[in-house]
Amino acid sequence: MSKSEARNFRSMAREAKSRLKNGFWENYRQDLEGELARAKSEGLNESKVERYFAGKVTYTIRGGEDDAFYEKVKKLLLTEGEVSDAIGRLTDREAFSRLSYEEKQRYTLNLSEKYLRALERFRREREYEHR
Image 1 (cartoon, one colour):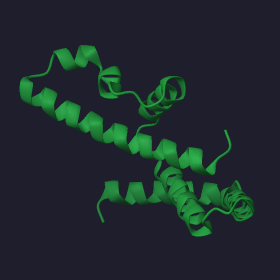
Image 2 (spheres, rainbow, N blue to C red):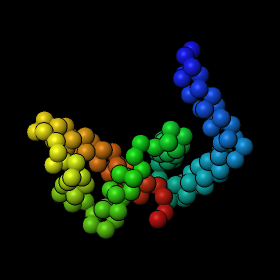
Image 3 (tube, rainbow, N blue to C red):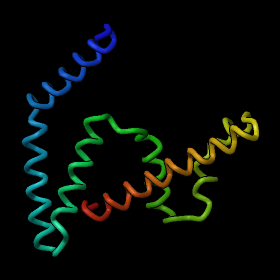
């Protein structure tokens, strides 16, 4: 194992220990039980709720991908709903203007993929969380 791998492993171990000390898993278990009870009372599929919360915890532990981008998408969806020009509204105009034609295509494709992931995350959150 290289030094950087060992350092990364130690960092991950410290984070896991911190989660244990701070009651992360107890809070997760309580939240899950509460949501399962709510799902049962509302007639929702309990296994979907479990999968949703498992994915949410995995996302939290990994540190998320791009929360700033997600927050922009969430704000857009809450204020305007799903709009046909979402990609255009989320494009960084200054950075986009400096790109070549091929880079612009790649940028737009990557932005579109990120938007679709954020949209799916938004829909899942709305389905299972009260806001």
